Length: 119
Image (cartoon, rainbow, N blue to C red; front, side, top):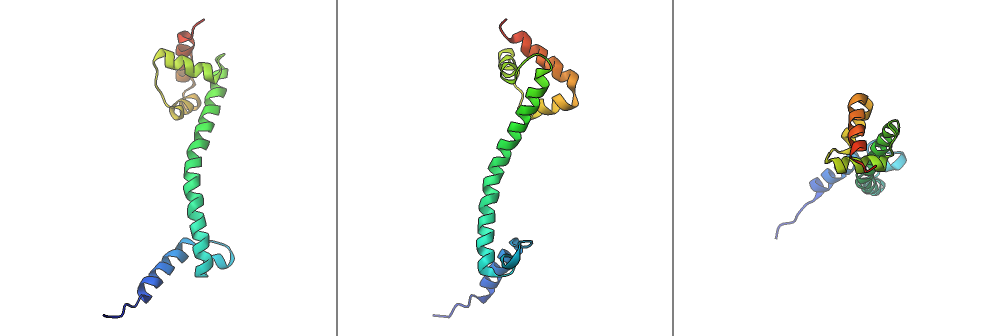
């Protein structure tokens, strides 16, 4: 059986890992053992934080909506309840941008939600 030489494959894998470690501090950027561990860990953090980013932005949108809706005499939870009773389906990102960019349109939305709530 022929002998398999793996120098080319190993070199390519090492180059790929070191390229991913570009910008890291100390030996983590140029020593393959340290770089591999650092890159593996950084990929775990990146995966985790892509999930956390969604949570963080949703919380931000809710805070913005809450602040905008309190100017119209409602709380966030009453506003969302009013929207659902009125049959208005709109995502929080859009409502947040509406509250910032189009206050008049958001005021109309708040009035519809307020009208749909029981007295």
